Image: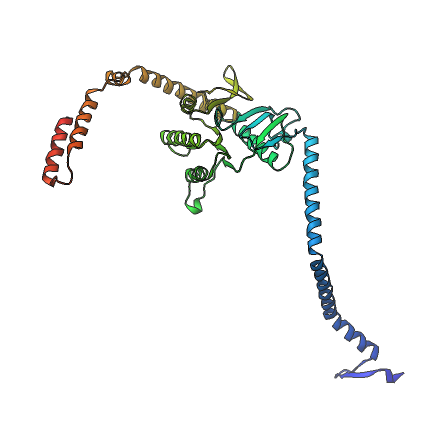
Length: 375
């Protein structure tokens, strides 16, 4: 019937009508978005309030599930990779038999990872100096000791056949460094900052891993720093693994109690070398840097030239050692050279001076006489 239609709008071309049903549908559609938002918020508030009332129960359940998840993961990897149960105690010993790196052994073919022992304590084996060429496995060995120690203390089985792990309070590492140019810090500065942190915070219960400290500066500076850090750490009785290319540090075994030398075994075959990946007692004075460069793909003409230069430098070093001056040989035998005698006499004169009563003119005269005696 015509009375169902309600005139809504008059246009030049005609009239627009609407029915009651259409009007109701329009209101329902226009209000539905607001209703959806309000309904969603009401449901959110209900869920939030329900969670709040059960928050302690939910957190406890989540914590239990998380622990079960971790323990199941520990168990699965222990079975899959043939880990052993470590003996964790309050001793000062880290004794690992046939240890492996848990990450690298997963990358290699099963059974191809070369296992290594490790032994550290606070008395006779607190500082292990590890030498050997790059790529031989020094860093891998040190990292696996740190990882096995950490895994044992978090309740996991460890990649070894036997492990006796004394609890450590901290594990410090100085392994690798990257330039922080935005902060104005070089590789060497980052390295020294990390070393400073270790020396300030390490205790007798700590484990320290040092990889090539001092290499970011000149040879003598780097060697001096590495030597001094070794002495300090040894004095602190911190269990430490120290990998280095400064073969002079192997002398520390005879100078510092508790220091032991180890090196990564290498087999030479003509001009080639084979990394055996096995750590053995004793130091080494070979870095095999030219061999490693060859393995890395450096052109043959460059490595051949480097080898020639190396032989020349070594020959000059030997000749220089043979041609010591008489005064140098005399000093080695405990005798003072004439120059050192003059220095001792000048030092005695300076010691007798009373600086508080010397005038500037007198000081100049004394300095002039000292200069004459030096001639």
